[in-house]
Length: 296
Length: 139
Image (tube, rainbow over all chains, first blue to last red; front, top):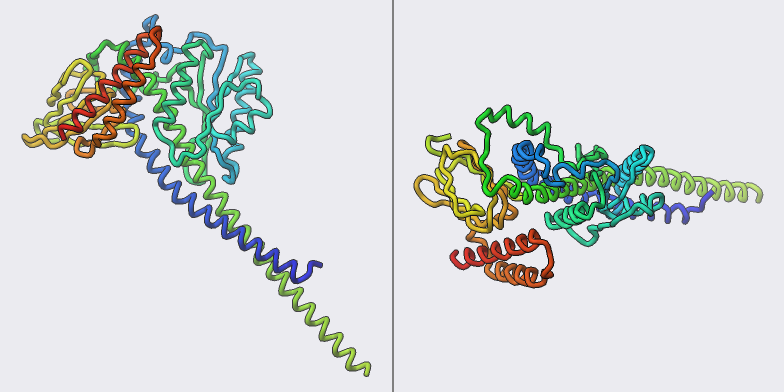
């Protein structure tokens, strides 16, 4: 039976925990709103980029010297997985979900006899995957100390990927991140970056625009494509980073909301316990006094 | 959409800056300034650093600096994908000078045997920074 003093200090400690989780929830909610707005703002660019790329890609993809960013190396042996997680924890299953998804992918690819390379964005995923796949790491990027994700960060990552491709470091590249479905639901998703996926969008836009959608290109299509593809890569990465950031805050908000509620329940339970113990003590003292008085 | 106009959209990775019907837009394509009117032949062009000028109701209403990018032109629509876009009025001269210095330094540091694409990219950045400074001074 814990003493009254013990119970009192437990209650106080849980109360201060609740204060912290409540504050974190509030902060996460505010940041979520900002991250969501940023993700929304990036969408029009990405959509239009996709549209432009699909019309261009259809024109160039069949030619033999199509850029590697578009068609890959033609082999399918070495896979680069870019895993996007958060730098911080305390966000429920957010980081472990995407890390576990990535681990399953690595295992599946290696079971097929492929070689896998890993590039992680965010500290948490790196820590998780390093335990098992330390030998496959080619790089680690963290966003620690940055307030918001900037397009420049995405460009940097894209530049690294492009440089690796030019050196022949991999044949196919995919991005693994938490897609933001809603505040309470983030879905680990794999998205192929290289070779670029343009087919489906191409078919649709050609139908919509009709046969007159034959563009003139200035400068030549290949040259435009050479500029456009790295941009496209950067914007895809940017989008994933933003979605992941929004998802992180959503997940953190939910986790902190639960923690706050649990702390509240615990306080109620402890308080009840405290009052019972106090009452028991009083009763015991009364009995002692009465039986003492009777004995006299 | 009113007669004699087309839909102009200007987007940067950060946001959608402009989306409305205009009469004419002058965009800085990589091979020279290009005026876009309704019914323009479909084109996809690369942009260099420069100023997009927008005309509505017979007047120039908007001037925006873009630091490069692409534009897709169709008879009814013109979509500009800018790497970065800022209204000319809010351009800061010191930021432009800073960028110009950085671009010059980057070009100077480039090793002599670097591939021509890299050299061209650095050159394009320098020209874009110069255009930014010019438009900042003109504003």
